[in-house]
Length: 311
Ligand SMILES: Nc1nc2c(ncn2[C@@H]2O[C@H](COP(=O)(O)OP(=O)(O)O)[C@@H](O)[C@H]2O)c(=O)[nH]1
Ligand SMILES: [Mg+2]
Image (tube, rainbow, N blue to C red; front, side, top):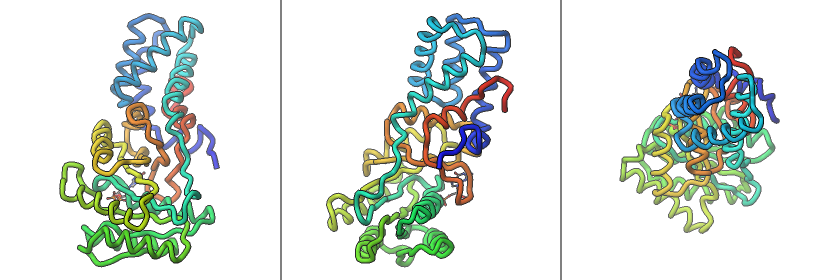
């Protein structure tokens, strides 16, 4: 279900929008005077709001070109052009997840510690279940005892089976067992949790690569999707996390969490421009309903107000 652009998402992104708008308000407060210094200042504001240098340049170049033709005279007209340009960068990465290609469709959830992997798995499992799919979870974070329990608790609450072994066991073996179980029970989607490793932690990264290799012994196509979760609040650091996980295991898609608590939501634009990886979901809160499919246009419209002074 597509939500109204000015509904829930708009309020969840308020910190990012205020961050972006407070800088722009100063520029437009005196009325719009289209000159080079205005474009440069807008570019600076976009960079400071974490949208990234190249996207900010692209957006401002387009703004320059279009302003010559359209001659926007109000802040609203300029904001509308900015929103459209941001949307144009985001549209290519709006690619909905299609779990119907394989049975079970296997998703390996990766990412550094604390970004929201396990929570995102639970939210996603519920979403898939509500769509009528059968789901299974695998407790592949065997590194922390509490992580297995956390996943089992979600499984019980959602009435979704969880395959787990004891703390300290081989994560690759858990993943392999879970795949066999999912296959024999005709499960539609298997979501495999993994331990949160700092991308600088070599051993744990190697274990992650091993999980993929062991799964590939059962089927060379596995996992069908490696979903990397990044926390929007880490800002520019999210970019280096994506880079590292790409080299270690390959990343097929992204989920970006914690957009509700941060002023750094503009990082999504930087991520989209730099990597072009599908952004499947965004996390906008801690409850089960707070995982939303990523919709480029709605996101762009929630990043900027329609009028300066709108909250
Ligand atoms: N505000 C907010 N909190 C989130 C979001 N996603 C996850 N969290 C919280 O982040 C914390 C760490 O999540 P967890 O799933 O255990 O992270 P993991 O270590 O990557 O598995 C938990 O307290 C979650 O409730 C989100 O989109 N918004
Ligand atoms: Mg976890």
